[in-house]
Image (cartoon, rainbow, N blue to C red; front, top):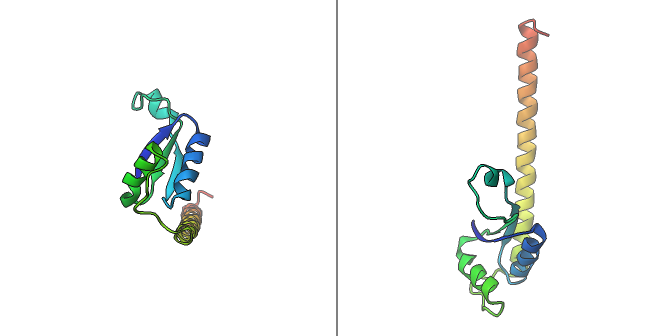
Length: 120
């Protein structure tokens, strides 16, 4: 996973991500933190970063952004892209559920310890 470009607006980054996706490249857009600029770690004014999720597609993505007529060598089929996105969504949902269960378990354990100690 590597950043291929930065953009002044998220909408511009999303538009370029859709362009890459239409050519079989797996993109992802994130907001860039203004906090990093505030403390001097970031000097540019970009608000969004465009990532390429599969490292072997990075060169194709960079070339395609520079030249819309570039012939992509490492393209995924629309079916493979859809499957990858579905799998990613399912994984994220599973991780969120596990995190919520861990938090609930921790709160219950804290309540039991505090009740046992007579604090509650």
